[in-house]
Amino acid sequence: MVLKVHSYPNNDRVMRVKIAALYVGAELEEVPVSLPLSGDVKERVPLGKVPYLETEDGSIVFESIAVLYYVGGLRADVDLLGRSHLEKARVVQWLSYVESYLSKTFPTLLYPHFRPENFKTNPLEEKSNEEQLLRVLKALNAHLTDHTYLASERVTVADIAVMPTLKRVFENIAGDDVRSQIPHVMRYFNTCMGKTNFAAVLGEVTLCEKSLRQKRDEQVKAKKAAEKAEKAKAKEATAAQPAAAPPAEKKEKPKNPLDLLPPTPFVMDEWKRQYSNNDTRPVALPWLWENIDKEGYTFWFCKYKYNDELQKTFMAANLITGWFQRIEHVRKFLFGNVHVFGKSGEGVEISGVWIIRGTMDPTDDNLMGKDDAAYYDWRKMCSDDPADKALIEDYCAWDGDFKGASELEFNQGKTFK
Image (cartoon, rainbow, N blue to C red; front, side, top):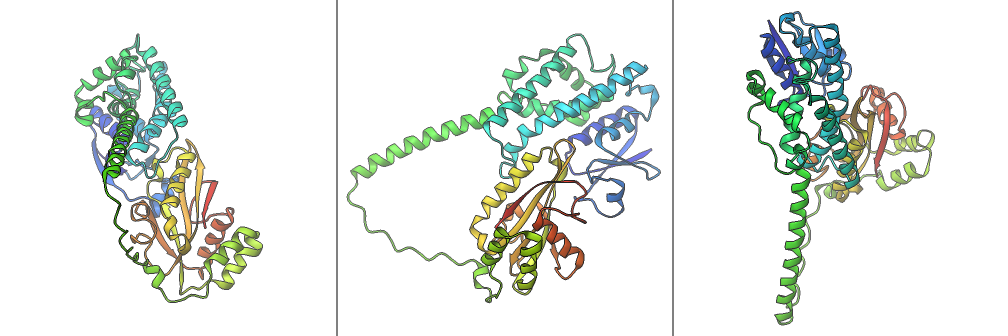
């Protein structure tokens, strides 16, 4: 049989499915996808998350645990789902444990280091997340004190579910100081990695001596010490030098291409005042439609490409705040509302609507910040189109149906003005 698993590359949740496929002897084809999902697939995968599985007859199974459970149950004689009724219940128990605690905690400690421009956290949150991860690992350690595997005396999908996550944790977050506190988890981890099917998918393991946070703190400390020494050295050198020569004439900074556009009758600052000082739907929006210069400004819809990776609403909000800070230099050309939809642990999305000077592509270096804009899919909107106009109004008002943007409930919004 040939099964197709659809996802982006190097997804830990796909690794689980690949291990299960090896155990049951199923042929698995990985199909790369572009996010957000569209067309018929979007209707069949309600929240648009990956991975999802396509069976031989074209049926769709979505949600990673359901995909793993389906593949693991293809051969009853392998017993990946447990033998007895009790074992089957314990398999589900540990699948729930892994998803509810381990898989939800470690990304908050990982993403801020690999993509700091998009995922920020404060020291208190970081400390709390580290403590939560250690509690989860210690509870696992207590269970494994007198158990070889999680749910049975044989490998089940519960073990397959936890191993890719443990590998990521041990390679990046749980250093020697943490691993020394969970010897039974380490014995269990090594036992599983010694099995051919696990090793074939997960590959070699390089345990970290120190966590990413510890390495970062050491680098920051070393950098501060170096800067302090450099300042002291520069101060000594300055004291020994003769009077400085008069400063060279400052070169005029090149103008932003948007400054060179033809004049427009639409005054962005006045729109921002109208928006800030009046009720949005009854006053501000009518003013906008009456005064907008459709030749001099364009409307754009943006949607974050990696919504499936977002676990917490606060992380999504931090991502938006960081983006806004990095485009401060072009504030006079832009107005936007970028919102967070959904709930932590249930599905989180980011999307927004912008009014932008001129017709420049938002991913241009001179506008939205090339690195930030590249994380979003962009669509030029037409305010004469009733659907687009309604969507623009919903984003400005922070309420409405948000039809065509998100099926999740509005959580919070941020305005760039």
